[in-house]
Image 1: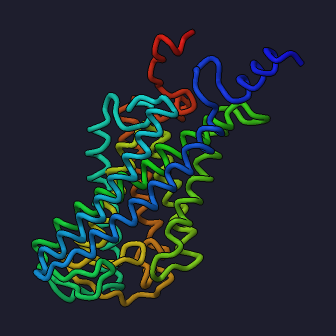
Image 2: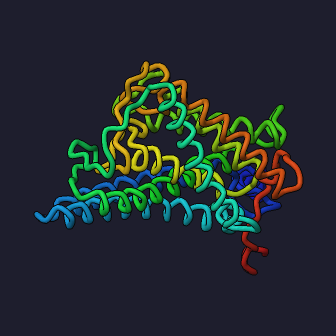
Amino acid sequence: MPRSDLIMEVRRVLVNQRERRLRAGWRLLVGLPVFGFVAIVASVIQFEITQTAVTAPILAGAVALLARLFRYGVLTGCLVALSWLLDLRTLVGMGLSGDGWWRNLGFGLVLGVVMTTAVFVVELALGFVAIDGVLVTRPENQFGVVVPPLVAIPGSFLFFIGVGVFEEMLSRGYLLNNIAEGIDGLGPFDARSAIATAAVVTSLVFGLLHFANPGTTLFSTFNITVVGLFFAATYVLTNDLGVPIGIHITWNFSLSSLYGFPVSGLTTPATVLSVRQTGPPLVTGGQFGPEGGLVVYLALAVGVALTWWWVEREESGVRFRTEITRPELRKPRKHDRK
């Protein structure tokens, strides 16, 4: 084979000529190691920040919060940078902007609270939880700080903003997008089946990322995977991350810091209501919280019904958004067109 033909063949394998960018598989092979390296560096820096000698409880809590927000900010920034520089996506193509994005985010924020409220009300009505106090500090928490509720609760909200944005950007905005693009058109995969497959794969990853949490069981991991599928569905139906980011933030926050449940096995430093779970762990989720029990499916039923209503209202119909495999891309620079 002539050298010029060999170069053209290699280029065809590596680069999507129409889009003038690396093919999705190669992008992941480059991007994931970069992300892994950044994650290690960010974790080391987070640890060093938390070693800062601070004795005042509120200042110690602020340092712990800032260290965690720093790590989530760096990791999210890395994913956005990879999507921008390597994937050549615009913010719209990442699911982080577009018509109706802020409305979707607002809806998601409200929906997260509605879902957890349904869990709390039903468990309370069934006698599966008892309220032990209001505005309660919880010394035994996974964050290692003890601060007054009026300080800890807003701090928890900021923390869960970092968690929600990062986890949705990783699972849906980066992995789902690239996997769906990569397998679309391969063998039996069309756009719909590629997106559905990517949703399943990334939801499994989402579930496994929570496997090391306190109180984890195989059932809780399965449930978290199903929750991931719900988040993926809200993304697929809206073609942006506004709804899943909103739900993710307020689901975690209201479950843990408004109603006092464990969230994915974690306990926050303070809560508006302190509850004691008395119902069967199979239903309540026990130490893992509602996400580890059957009650999570009540919340998901509420979430699915209201999301369907919202999308029908905003989009004048519910449809599978196959545009995910054809994202909005940045225009190549002039020298890239040569």
